[in-house]
Image (cartoon, rainbow, N blue to C red; front, side, top):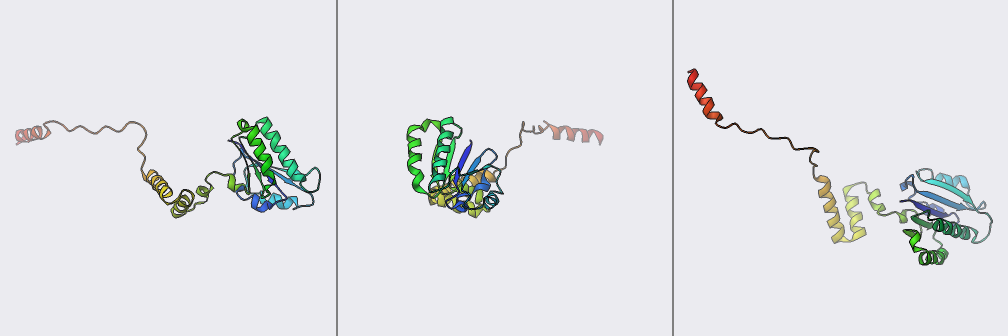
Length: 194
């Protein structure tokens, strides 16, 4: 499952890149920025802990909405080429919504999901599981995500699964068969020796 993130460098990029450290080598992050905006070296520092492929794309032309149009163009090309199962525009700018809705309506069979999200972390399925450091953290996160009843049941199920000791692989060892008439034979041998 390849995920591609198109990040709007003009719109709260620090928030947008939250969760980039949770990505894998098969994911790609395209960061669109303007020369006049946040310095490229600062953006690169925000991406330092990721395993994902990161590309920094400088805006071809400055001005209002230039990055927005460039991102939508790139997203359209990715969808048209069927290069992304999951593609996300990362921005708090709601102006992308109409273009994304148009892609969903016309090209729904070309991808699994295309969406506008405020951060990379918001695109990841079950990120709370990856953040849980203790059992209590996990239980609280499951309850928050699924509600008290279902979250509690899910936690108890996972707890039971992980507490079970797995049987060793391979055939079970054979038990020694008790000898028949062992005591009688032993008693008879003892009588003879007396």
